[in-house]
Length: 360
Image (cartoon, rainbow, N blue to C red; front, side, top):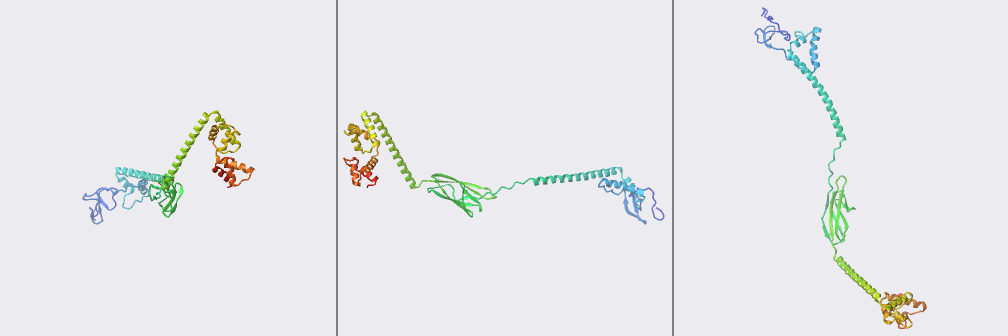
């Protein structure tokens, strides 16, 4: 130490040690600060930590700064130049700083590229989201209620009724139903037996609802009696037709097995009826009389019995024939039609004929 109290430099100090620092005389540190009067308790054993450059440009700036300072010759007063400070950093530390700067630069480039890709993906996702339409939630069903289930009636009509969502329309078997608020009703015709029906309710923005019901219609007592009467009449008609058929078959057999005289008498009777009107008795007389065809009386009777003649109609024709040539009163025409000297119709047949021509 000098007389003035200022320490003598006994060994050179690194360039990173600033002005006012000297080698520690006690060896407690590499450098110790002298404030001009005394030693302080501030020591320096290694260079100050260097900030890690954020990018390669910072490393280049750090590397070029000492050069620029050396070129200009104006380093900070009392401090070593940037180049000296860089050289004082151990070689391994300098390599680490450079590698860290390069890695940081690559990370920045990667982040920038990632942001661009992410922006592109976001744009594509937004485009897909714009073009794709999310599926709409299912529409709520229309509430439809029938006040009763399947049932039976004896009437020809019945009324269905129930409730429905307000504003909905109701159809029964395709026919519009009257809806009042939330209540509906419909009168329908029924057939005998089961009558299945479909009720459908629809409302805009809602799913339609369909329900089925079956109404069974039974016969009323009057219908049962009418049905029984119809069955009875049908049976009687069938029996009558059967008897008539059997009678025709018997008659045909009798005609086929009749004698030649009987068959000729039948043909002669049919010929008389084609040209004139006769009563049953008058036709028999015409076939068997000496003035007529002179068939045996039995054969004449057989022939007339095997004819299919309406004798009332014959009486009407005979009355019309009389009126064409003569004038008669009601009683006189009946007498003429029924007497032995006349046409020999029965009294009932004669009266029918006179009434039909308008005399009685």
